[in-house]
Image (cartoon, rainbow, N blue to C red):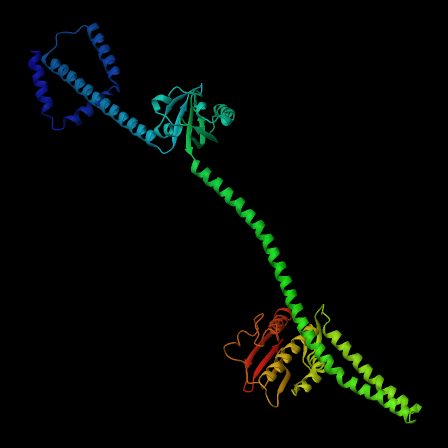
Length: 471
């Protein structure tokens, strides 16, 4: 009877189209237990309750229901077991994934127990410490730290355990081979305080790079220090060289000036000699009277005063200007020509001066006169070198907008195109070592452009070279 009823219930159950949905619906309505142990306890409790009850004889319908209920419980138990197996598989997969992440992480992870011994370590941590994981478990972590850093590490670990906040420090590990590895240690205690989780980050390359950078920085600072000394020395040498150039140029000009003084004084000295001879002849011929004597003395004193003014002009020419002043270009040209006129006349070089208005310049008048002197002397030498007949130097002074312009032009035929760009270079000369230093025009350009903020240029005109001073 029971077997027949059981077969009838089974055939009825398997005739249901979606058995899983049916069983799940029943399970939900019956509030099925969530674990196998609870299912077992509930079943045992129900059996005891059933045994304690007094049941009248079961009808065939009641037996079918009982069989159906047992089969439903069996299906629920099987489904619970399947779900438990799936959950266990998922947990195992998660554990495997966590183990893979833990083991193959690029950062070393170490777990320390309360004694400071290693209780767990991943592959990267074992590699940094320098040993097999199986041989590291149970060993004290501090023994792998370089001796000088052990006290500091002990204090760091103690502080990390006490604070339960992530702390970090740097330490040098010594593996079993004795090779140093610089690591950054980040430690944090677990909630229970029983374990200390440590992350080890290899910063050896970074420390080496920092040390190399510090060495390079030190070398750079030393180089900068030496550069400052070298620059100061080079500046001093350049200034000394400039002073030497100026001195050489002044000496060259001084030689020209002495020659000019000789030309300036030659005629007055001759005249003065004639006056003295005239006095002697007048005395011998008894023609010397007071009036004749006074006239001769007066003329002689005029000559002496003129010679004295010439000395004063030359002295002022060599005096260095300390500050910029406003001066007349026409006056400086006239002062310069007064010093060289006799020299140029003796060499049959005519000077034609044309001035327009009264142009003024704010600068250094003596240096400006030196520039005029250098250019005029170069023009004179070129005229003599080329044996120019009717040698002529033309000077033209005028204002052009806000600038004052002076042009000095000769009729020597001009400057060769191959050297015209070089004539302002230091030590460049076409006169030969016994006749020129090659610094006159260089110093002239320096004075006009650097000292007075103007321009000094040269070009070839129809008759010869034309120098243009523009300030």
